[in-house]
Length: 44
Image (cartoon, rainbow, N blue to C red; front, side):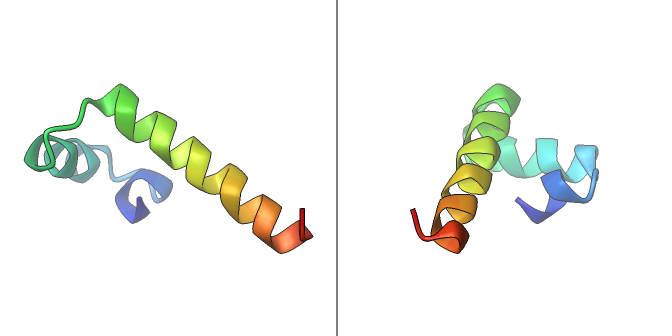
């Protein structure tokens, strides 16, 4: 997630490959993590 957030696209792609995830899956999971964090912070 940190590679994704900091724009380190090559590293993000390599980590996704190692985890057997597509780049689309990584992007979706990253977005879900952001939404979850916002909910936790806002107390929803």
